[in-house]
Image 1 (tube, helix red, strand yellow):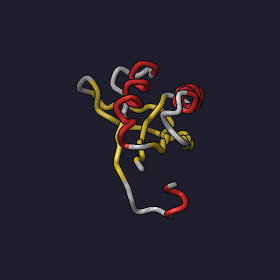
Image 2 (cartoon, rainbow, N blue to C red):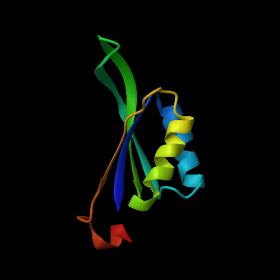
Image 3 (spheres, helix red, strand yellow):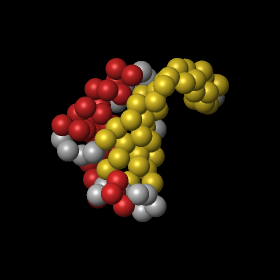
Length: 95
């Protein structure tokens, strides 16, 4: 199983993109987390924005397609898309 962390500008964008990933069967589930404040450096200055994070659950072999879909439909020039694989989970959940 693979977990993919993605941030979005708001819950509407997260729902729209996650729904598309579900419709195309690229992910099995997507969790949208509460809005939070992001502080980051961009163009030489510290920025402060509200955004929402999400965790997507899928298979490692689908990552390239998932990333491509996100990059195509996301409003950010450089969205955060980070993936990591896990085998440490409840066996029934992994099925």
